[in-house]
Image 1 (cartoon, one colour):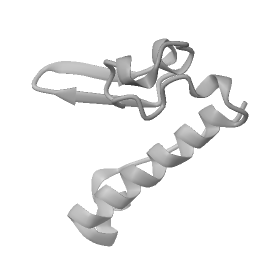
Image 2 (cartoon, one colour):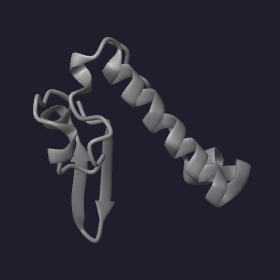
Image 3 (spheres, rainbow, N blue to C red):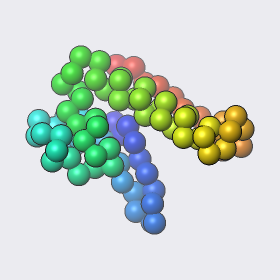
Length: 83
């Protein structure tokens, strides 16, 4: 599962199961989350927390940049998946 996926200058960077399922220290994370969600699958409710935090970050950033028009103008649809 991918929590974050960013397209920047023609390259896609993501935070996916390689990060979430890692046992290595978060300081060794090289994905787009920068260690924020490293190993979260091993914490109770960790992956759901990561999804909720990412959703809030996207909504907050969008509103700061585009105001309340964010959802309508950008056609943004966010889904949460619970395990």
